[in-house]
Length: 225
Picture 1: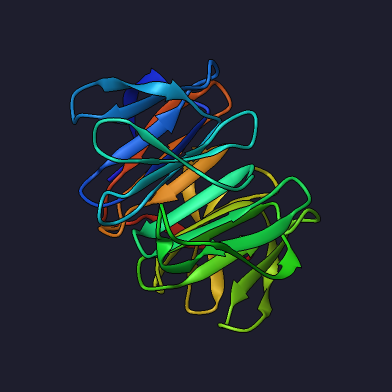
Picture 2: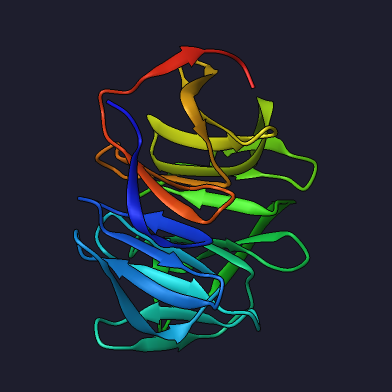
């Protein structure tokens, strides 16, 4: 298997199940992948999170938070610069001060944001409650339910869809996956942004904002970050 180029231009993307992929372009426009093309969704955002159950949240350039209700966006109180969705009950994010929050029960209308210890620039949550993050100095952390445990290596960005599915972008923009306590590098690909679905399909964006998709079987070489 190899990386397949997908038509379109994006700056950030997130993926749920069965290639339910949403993305943002350089104009802050929001798109959903239909399997053939990208469908423009109303609204503007700079970051999107997609859960395994199809739950979608975004944040815009003014740090406002919105949840997709199937026909439009519901404004959610709070201010974040990055958001991640595992499913409707697992929504995490970070604000402009690098503080980390999760939404109680993921509830759009009645939930509240709860701050957890630590400072991160990127957080990712899976539907099984697995949470990973990256700090401003590129250190990697995994949430144990009470605090962050540092994991060896350095990453620019991280994405998880389950306890066993964790990928990231290394310092040199190489694509890595965490397996058996080490980071393994994918061959022949350099990306700026990466995501992995609960089905283990990888999606990514390169420095030209071009989109790529990779399906199992996975081809990587053993190598630490």
